[in-house]
View 1: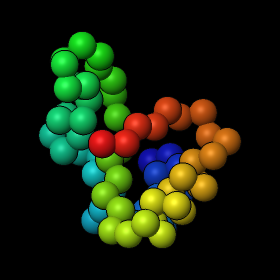
View 2: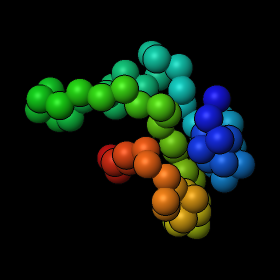
View 3: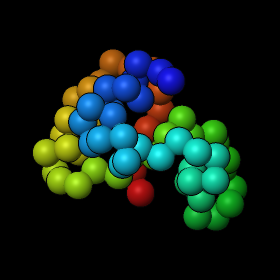
View 4: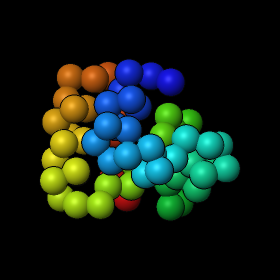
Length: 68
């Protein structure tokens, strides 16, 4: 488990951070099935405050992020 995921657990709660391969598989490709990746996790924030906290905590990290 990475430090980044631990920080996200603190923000949204463990139940809202998906990391199992089956859970993140649908997020591993774009809508055209042209680009593929390996998501470290999928976050399911419940509020705009959680989204803001996620973005703030991700700032300066080298991991890429996308919104869907």
